[in-house]
Length: 406
Image (cartoon, rainbow, N blue to C red; front, side):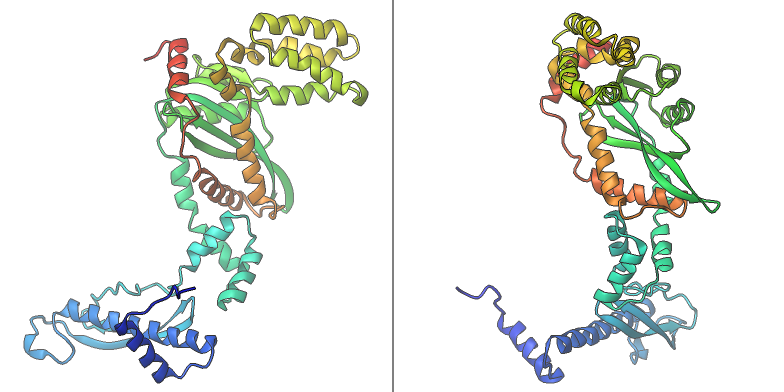
């Protein structure tokens, strides 16, 4: 097989000169050579920047056209992926020189902070990240230092949380994921309320995340009002769980929206009352309801369920009966629209992604720690949200007809 790495004569001569000068014996020697070369290169860039700032080189006083001049150097040590590098930062007498190769307050040129954020977004703990940096880069960064590095994402996350939203959404899914947070020396279970919107273009976006206490309709009312205040005027369909009062909260803020309760959540709720030996036939009878082609046939299947199981499992059957208006919304739509609002794939897959990246962090030290971790996870998860559902154009046309919009 031919070599894949071919050097030009000039590059080969350069490499040979480096080998002759530095006398490397192994890979570690090569890395040390690269560290020295990086330091020399940065130093040369700093000197060139000062020349450009003053308009003349160090000993070219004849072309000096400024009353400013060099004023020695200040020592600085920066961290690189190759190790620490000592630099001499040029100074000018007026104190106006602002180096760009290595900025004034920059002590790390290895992009370690970006790596830290990436690792944090993938679910690594601050202690794991600290150990990784020490083992791979020889950088001694404590877990507390890592936490401070990730804190710089908080203002960005808060800005994202308050960004303007679109005027109208076809569908909005709402749910809550629960995490443990330390507060006043106690571990408290807190809900992270999540809203995912499907734009009229068919693409999805996370509208926001809100950290609160126990899941409640009152809290969701505040979330809905915030969404409205950020520019949302209309939502066609809101897909939610069966929280008591949730429908009333939606009606109060978006009265034109239709409400669809999660069928999967409803199935889980009703089957928890059923004995294991009856579970399989009971679930088969439920399928005749939620997979029915029309609302009329679904109600017939519900009558049959009640006749067969009503006396043995009254709570299971009455739950379908009492919540039918919000459980049956999807039945009036064609198959393409049903597939989107009938299943909870969008929110379930999203929640699964959140749990995956936070499973190593069993308890968060604060709300801010939870928020920045969830935000980074959201950015990581939503990178893949680029396309619209198949046949979305036809789906949107039908939604617009149903809701009387153009």
